[in-house]
Image (cartoon, rainbow, N blue to C red):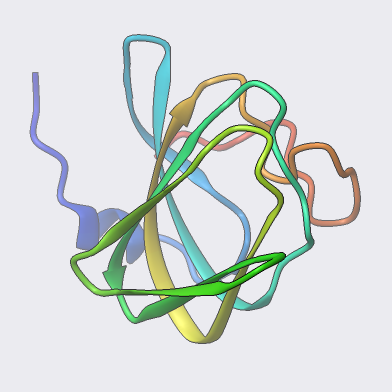
Amino acid sequence: MEKVNIREKLGQFNDHWNPRIVGELNGQHVKAVKLKGEFVWHHHDHEDELFLVTKGTLKMEFRDKTVEVNEGEFIIVPRKVEHRPVAPEEVHILLFEPASTLNTGNVENERTRKTLEKI
């Protein structure tokens, strides 16, 4: 049992849209990721996702609205809900989701990460 320093983990990489595993519990992954720009519209058939903003502002787009998520806030996207994360400026995020969750959900493209690095 060791503590995890989130800032230290996020300081180990500079790329965007490439989550790293920083913890595991009960079949869930805790992932650190930096976002910048627009992601792809997608959904997850079987998994809910929690996005916790540790730095910056995330705009979570849904087909009928956009929710702004600021530093120290989180949003839970229920399974089967189509969404698109957007980060006009760099945003640091912790994701809490089942280990089986593919970052692009039902879409596979150049941003899909099937294997994640553990840091």
